[in-house]
Image 1 (cartoon, rainbow, N blue to C red):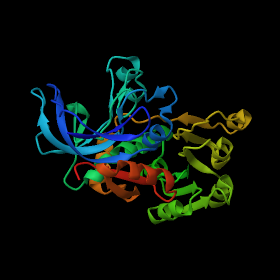
Image 2: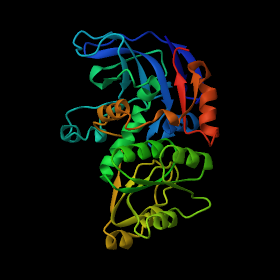
Image 3: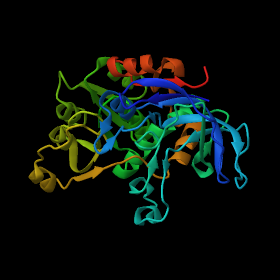
Image 4: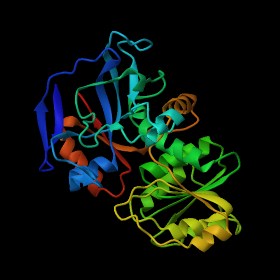
Length: 344
């Protein structure tokens, strides 16, 4: 089978590998669509994220969907030909966090496209059957691949307790900000304000449900939220950028007694915080990491038409053009999400 491998020299090379054979509890998936995540681009550009370093050839891609090509002897409930979205983290199931249902915090996770674990830039992937989520007929393969970031947005809105009638402010109009906007609307938020530095992303946010937007290079995020809410502030504020977080803007945008949820992963994330403002306004400041138990709800919301996410996919390239796709994902400020089509 054909694969696209990121080498130790951070170049893409095409490599023929043997098609995997699924274990008794696994399925063999013929991959169709894989999203390009910011983390993928970061590995390609820098060769590491924190302590995770590309020291051996690595397959990138963890936002993935495909079609079942074979099933292991002990697999039930999934058949050859079923279309599936793959949940990318294999957890231990025995640690404290797994037992609590917080498996996104499992310290022993094998996560796709995180060194040393291969991702989905391959024609076939063998994967645990219980992490292969069957897609209804009205959910596309692209939506299936984008269930991964959508699940992240759903997890964040659950962390923030977004409910009916809430006003939500989101700093960041990229992939995570966009899916968080969709998740917040599905959770019942009635007013959503989005801030970003790229006008085209703000225009797309407005076209897909944002009630107000602000270019934070030209305007004050917190001031726009304050004006929109008549001085009250937002019930829940999300930080969803990949740059150094402006925590003061987040805090200033939240109402007294409100919540700030931080999702974005920045290179330089150490910032000064006005602790007194957090205390006197009794703010909840929370972190949100990946997701747990959100793939099922994500697929249900898409099937019901309660959320739309395919609009965030700007372009699709075949696996043969993987380098060109990564260059565009890196260089095109207007692009929210690039996709790789496997098998074309």
